[in-house]
Image 1 (tube, rainbow, N blue to C red):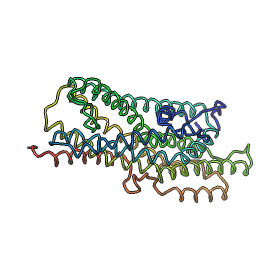
Image 2 (cartoon, rainbow, N blue to C red):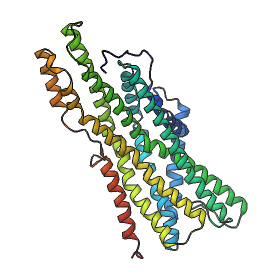
Image 3 (cartoon, rainbow, N blue to C red):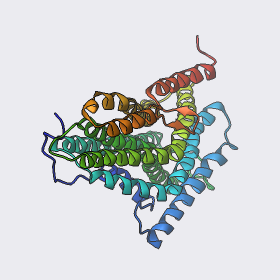
Length: 387
């Protein structure tokens, strides 16, 4: 059914709500994606980054100088690598704040474009899905931290949740042990909230772009000769569709030039974190709680890269449909001038739009499978006892 025969809805849709849970995690870091950025929030963001991403991260790096055996090394490395990658990714997010504000402005422009009730319902479903995805990732990352904390509690004061260095002896002092474990767990939960912003910001934006692009394609497909409109009016509708497509491609370029680096860090870190965690599990006996913690951690490493690959792949797939959708419209009924501009636009949109992680690696479902293979290959190379 074309837009001409569907009733346009006046109900407003706010695409930015899809990032509501992600922005909530950012607020815990002192980061606000708004024009106004009060000084207290800037101080909060600075102190948060210094305390967690520099000082707390340093406790894992310093611990490397005190490891006595392979077990201690493997207990330290996975989270050490994860924290280092998280610090690099969140630094990118902090620097991207102006770009994210600009993306939101452009999304609001798209929200104000003509949409039918069906299209707005579809957009609302996508918004709800993105919010649910962020909430689920928060739950998974928090579960990882609490499971490791539970494993530490089960050790009866002999170990912390993660192998990290502290400038005092905590093993033989009950108060110090519980204080240290509490502080470590609190920092880990805060780190997990950072990871949600790192891992989902790009994915959610791509998801929103995909549904907005679909709406624009439907508007393109509805273009036809209408005796009730002058050629100038029909051509103006066509130009408006072109402008909306330009907005989407502009957002795409911002993501390509910025957020793609966080996804690159995800790929590299996930391979090493998964393989070292798996090696630790294969080489040394673990309690049931420790095994559960390691399993959830490894699953989380896989989960964190999937949304970016999936939604980047969907966006690429949708851009590939542009020429077909335009060709399938009633363009033969249009005036020669109209057809000329339509053909030019079709030629301009033939180039495939692919997000490149670090401007090097295509972010697709095929890449996701390649990363999984790399995880397994690295684990097998590192495991000397494999048969």
